[in-house]
Image (cartoon, rainbow, N blue to C red):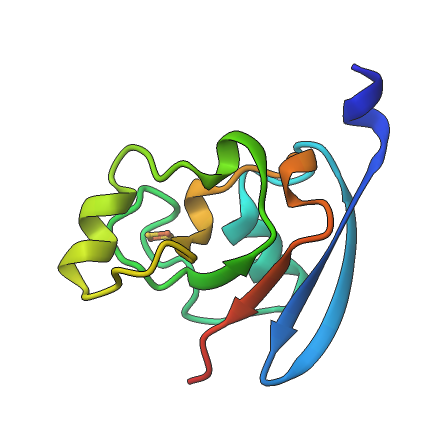
Length: 110
Ligand code: FES
């Protein structure tokens, strides 16, 4: 419980610019919603987080704990679209937890 009350701090990199994010456990349903809202990203997370569209794809560095595990539809969706790197993730499949502390989340440049 106490762990959940501490701030979670990580960095988002958008077009080479580092954006510090400070949030709380469960502040959004998942990382996709946080990124979409905080960075006002259009055309991001189009399937609403069910793991099918891959419009929420990001590169990650430094994520820890259970959040490193690709689960549910994530591996199949990424594989189908040619993403084979372990650090490429669907942000909708990553929850806002302490596993994000100190991580770097890079958006793909469009
Ligand atoms: S929002 Fe569609 S796969 Fe993540």
